[in-house]
Length: 324
Image (cartoon, rainbow, N blue to C red):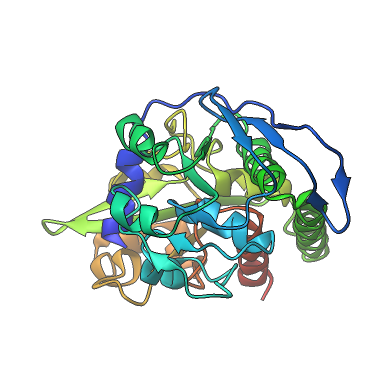
């Protein structure tokens, strides 16, 4: 978990640009497929031209791999396949894609050996790497995150990938499924008298015996889902402009007051910072939500920076935790 946390935190400093709108030159035919050439404008403003819907697709980041799987497109290559299977179980791989290396440093040789129709990446990947990828195949770049509109960005990414793969109708189904989960979750919370409850979601890691806590603020994707469920984000700290993430320590938790506290920690973690490292900490034990037993460890395998599938799984998990 710590490795993933550090990677994601570093990624938030990358220079990002707004996602452009995709267009296709021909109407959608059949079950979400397109015929004819496709022309798209990606998040960097680059024009992406395809002879037809991409079939052999490589994904360099887990959120785009998730979108591909959700759209019924089995990627021929994906970054850190083992990690994806561990941290993103909401959209399990239906095939055995070639592992192309790490999310931050994909292997150009491995990708080239796959002869892909399309490479889907994100604005977190360095422009120098994207330039190399363009020598191999057309590259579609989506914006990783946007704290001003996380839900909208999530859907725009899905739609853009759907246009490139001719799966627009499938994308509409994915979004409807997500919306239905939100509606059911909100209704369940209302029935339980929890509508408007204050919630604080965070993850954390341990370095040099010090616990660092990462709040998912109002501008985070998790924060946006909580808001859709009718919950109120208890974090007052300001998050970064891309992922809506912040940083604090156990003392910072004293400002939360009486809230529902939720987090996710994987089984491969050497330590669960909240349940292990802070278990005997006097400040932690004095917190109202700890005293009341309102600390909820959600199931692992929900990728906090994923697409509709992951966020739907999160919605189900947090509603279940709060209402049981």
